Amino acid sequence: MSSHQKRELIRALVIDDNVDLAENIREILEELGVEALLAHDAASALEIAARVVGAIDLAFVDLKLPGGGSGVELLPRLRALSAEIEVIIVTGNATLDSAVQAVRHGIFAYVQKPFDARDFIAIAERVVAQIRLRKERERLARELERSEELHRSLVEMVDAAILLIDREGTILFANPFAEERSPHPHGLIGESFIETFIEECLRTRVRRALSELRPYERSEGVESHARVGDQLRTLRWSVSRGGSGSDERYLAVGIDLTEMRALQMRALEAEALAAIGTLTSGLAHEIRNPLNAAALQLELIVRSARRVEEGSLRDRIEERVEIVRTELARLSSMLNDFLSLSRPAALSLEEKDLRDIIESVEALQRPLLEAEGIELRVDLPETPVRARIDETKIKQALINLVQNALEAIRAKGGGVIEIRAKARSDGAVELAVADDGPGFGAASGDLLRPFMTTKEGGTGLGLAIVRTIVERHGGELRLFANSPRGAVAQFTIDRRA
Ligand SMILES: Nc1ncnc2c1ncn2[C@@H]1O[C@H](COP(=O)(O)OP(=O)(O)O)[C@@H](O)[C@H]1O
Ligand SMILES: [Mg+2]
Image (tube, rainbow, N blue to C red; front, side, top):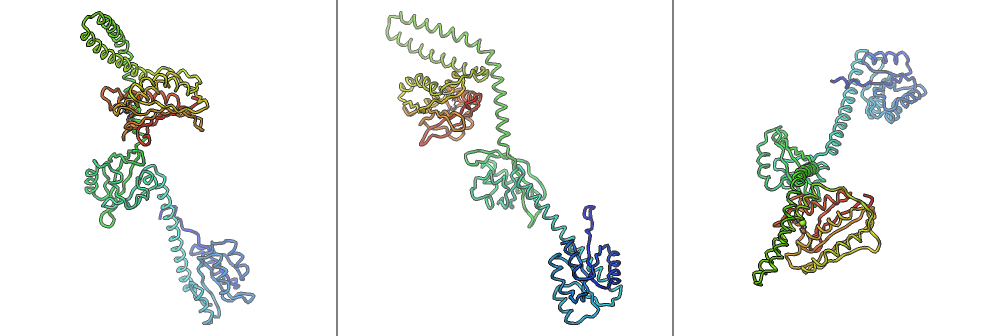
């Protein structure tokens, strides 16, 4: 027994009008480590029992009490106060009838006066041992319940997925954290751990690792993605095996790394951008000068070409010049993109009506789009959509999004682009550019990262720039599918930003 499992106090009530006898019994009980309270009639017995409610473990009851009451009548009332009470009837004139009655009341023993002290001690020892056993059992049950409670709350509250699986990988138990990351709407019990949480390309490896686990061994961690709703979550699983035989159970513990990995990714991007920043600012000057010189030379070539007599030769020269001009413009805008991502200038915020901003973007883009057979729609509310913004930056963001929409639609030779704005009730402003092109496809989260492009000749900086601009305005950029087809790039701006 450890120190805190100290013996609990046993308390006895001795009810007898024979004061000497009661005192004798008390002495015997105290020898056995039992505290004894004395009562000389039924009324005071009940009074004591009521005072120490629930705490009388043992009663010695004289069958014939003063005032004509029978000890047996006292029993139900004592039990009502102390449910677990053990009773020993002590009597001078036993009748068969009273003995039968007493036994019916479930008493522990029946002692006849005058009794032999050794017999009495033996009975007392037996009853005390029995009470000690019951108390120990109750204590253990309480402790078990407490430790189960503790484990249950641990399993429920811990920030990890905890699964109990059998040797086939069928889930027998899942904690709430695991259920929250489950694609099964009706719960995880009975589902396959591997098919639910492990990516296809890792399944064979994980299956083999599980089958090779020896009793009480833990597997190496494996990191796997699982789709939960429209989210991809990254969990790192490790599996421990229990015993063998009927005890063969496996405990799978999954730590959710999604947020951490996303943070790591952002940190890496920031680092890459910082490196590019240093490089670009150094090179920008070196590149811009020859670019300008090349553009100038090109204009001179155009002028000279005008003097060429032969029409077809002149046309050919002009055609090529146009190609070079476009390429130079592309280089120059790429340079600007790099610069604005890596060395973002301070925002110059002013309160504006975003409807004006959108209208000026519209005026700029409409001719370009119409030339490609694309319809531009603008959906603006009647009332001003005010926010503190950097006008140039927000225009750039919108133009980048319109440019992407145009490039997405271009292949199918026509379509619709819509720019929308509205003021939300939570104090944010919401802007969106929607198109009816092919849409973003599956990995839309990745498209926001710099250098992520699916276009030949794309830089993959457009959306990264939009995101940076939006986030610096205290907003968020989200990409989702348009219905029935196409893409929506939507961003918010905190009006107070
Ligand atoms: N409106 C859109 N519809 C479909 N895909 C898009 C759209 N806008 C962006 N994308 C995808 O996102 C990628 C990244 O865009 P962006 O960062 O602007 O770089 P880039 O335009 O240079 O490729 C594009 O290559 C394209 O695959
Ligand atoms: Mg782009």
